[in-house]
Structure formats: C-alpha cells, structure tokens
Length: 427
Length: 52
Image 1 (tube, rainbow over the protein chains, first blue to last red):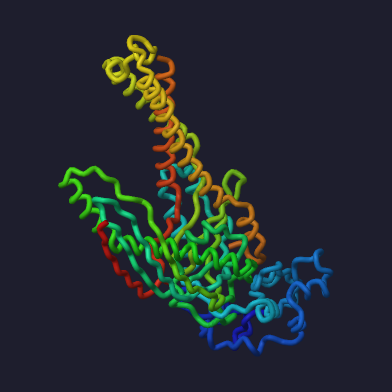
Image 2 (cartoon, rainbow over the protein chains, first blue to last red):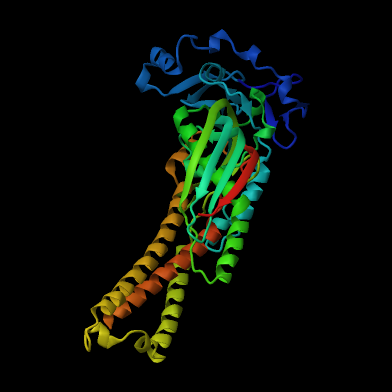
C-alpha cells in the first residue's frame, strides 16, 4: 500500500535528505510520523490470526509450491508479486511503493527503523569516489555507471544486556601476571537477520548508530524495499555475542596493553632479559544478553556489470560506508608480480653468487656430508631450506586467498539476485 | 646446489606473492571492520599485576 499525498493523491516517497515524505507532483512535504499505520491494516489484507505465515501459505497456496505472495497495488490495482520475505516493494506498473501490511503485522512487525540518511545521489557519488581510487581497478570499470541502485531495509535483531569478564595474561618468574576486569552495558547491538547477506559483509557494514532509530512507521518504507527476518534467533544471538566479545576484548587490552607492553619491554631490555610476553589468556566471562527488539537497517545495493559478471556493492545507508571489492586488473597484477620477482631474483643472484655470500653462508662440504659428516648441521640446513620457502609460500597464497575471498563476496550470485529481484524502476 | 636454488626461488616467489596480494587488498578492498562499536556503553576497566 502506498502513502498518498493528502493534497493531490499522488504517491509519496521518503526523502533521506530532508527526513520527510515528498510528493513529486505537487511538491508538498509531510512528516513521516504524521501517518498512522494501524488504520491501514484491514481484515481483507490480514491472514487468519491463528495461522503462522507458513501455515497461511499452505492453506492458500499449497505450501511448498509457492514462495511468493500476489499483492494488489492500492494505487493502480495491479498485481504485484512479493517474495517470501519481502515487506515492501515497488509496483511494476505504477512505481508506487507497495507494503505488505499483512506480512508486517502477522509475521514480525519491526519495533524500530533506522531511516536512510544518505540519498541515492550521495551513494552513487561516494561509490564512484571509492572506485576511481584503486590502483588495480580496471580503467573500463572506473568509467562504468551503476546498473541499478536500490535502497533496501534489512532486518536486524537488537540485543541488550551486560557483559563482564575477568581475563588474566599469565606471566612468569620475571614477568607479572596481568589481570584485567572489565564490565559494560550493551545497548541495541544489531545482528542482521537476513540469510542472503554473508556474516562478513554484515560486519563490514557496521556500525549502525541505533541512537537515531525511530519507532517503526511504514512512511519510512516509501520509495524503498525491505525484507522481513528469515534467520533463526539463535544464529543472530551467536553472531552478536562473537562480535561483542571481539570488540570487548580489544577495548579491554587496548586500555592497558600498549602502556603495559612498552613499560615492560623497556624494563626487560634494561635488564638484558630476552623474554617474549605470554599470549596465553584465561577468561571468565559473565554474559547476559537478550534480544530486546527487532529493527530495519538502511542499506544501499549498487550493482555494476563488468565483463558479464555482476558486482554488488553495499553502502551503509546511515554512514555511507562502502563495502565491496571491484574487479582486478589481472594484466597489471601479473605484470607487477613478474617485475618484482625479476628484480628480487636479480638482486639475490648478484648478492649470493657474484658476491660469494652463498659460499659464506653454507658450507657445501657439510651439505655433502663430507669432512666430519656433521649430520646435525646438515639436517638443520636442510630444514631451513625447506621451511623458509614453505612459510613464504604459505603467507603469499594465504594473502591471495584472503583477497579472492573478499572479492567473491562482491560477486556472490545470491546477493546480486537479492537486489535484482526487487521489482520496480532500475535506478 | 640445485636444491638451494629451488629453495631461494620459491622463497622469492612467496614474498612477491605476499607483497602483490597486500598491495591488491590495500588498493581494491573497500570496507574495513570498524573500531567503533556504539552498542558497548559505560565500559569500566580495572587492571592489576601480580608477581609470582
């Protein structure tokens, strides 16, 4: 159902820049909160109160064979297909926002919403600014315009509670044990509850500042798409705990760590004691975390098609943080690698062979098992010659895999399909 | 001698790969895990040292 302008009857859209509903026909502005939701939920649109959404589907559409609703657009009467977890979409015929009120009221109505603060134009500008920077970004990609830009509200469970932990870093005879006690309150920690968005991507989109959340009102959905939660609460709870634990530990040791490490380092060096600080930390955490509410968070989805492969970038609709990795200029990458390899090999050749460093470092009589036949030295050198390249290759390939994994998040077909499946206008 | 050569070449290969991959990540990757976590409020920290 669309919000209509009280003056001229045209469909209204939410404008992130002015935080108002704008009528594109007569130009009037309206406060989002001035429209009430309750009056618009009608029996006609609402499934039976006793049925869950899945039961409702089974009864009305034969269960497993259908995973979409057909919703009647209140603006033009056209039939709009609403996917299983969609709350709001756009009418393919008239372009006005269609909100499935029955879905909101019966499945899981959000308590809060963080409205979009970044406009579509600002999002595209920010995206282009980022994409033109990268040294390895192909030139053709830099000139491309986004294929489509869609603002989608993603569901998130909000967790609140308290977190207390006592952590001890074990010392030794010269180094003292360090105990850190930390406690804090957790307020509205969001964990995205939409299965399409990978956990890594969701974390990169953070932070969302829930202090600027608003009571949920469908006025904010006008002009945007939105989804209902489709992830079990246990999954979001685990994700929230992991995230908070990481941040808590960082803050705990940052507060004392640097000062402590530098102080201790100086003291140990002064005493000519060569000791590495223990990495072993024991923890005794007391966590009280519970889901307190459910909110919608604003995310812009930007799709760019390059060499027939879609790339989907996500932009935090509140902070403008761009998440994603553009394609790689493979020729440039290979060229740089070959050049670097050639230069370093040449330098090593000169140093080791022409300079005679190799003869100095390795006693080939020992390697050959000659003279005294020092087996221990031979094994040591052998392990060194096998170990160093293995470590080096491990680090090199590890970093490359990290990069390709991050790139694969941008080219994930599910995310592309998720953004592409939203109906309505392309940009 | 050949064994030493292979070892040196593989080491250089790995180092070059690590350098190039790091440059690639720095250049192309957008979106870093933020240090800010606004949901953590009123954090109190107490520390103590104990010698053995």
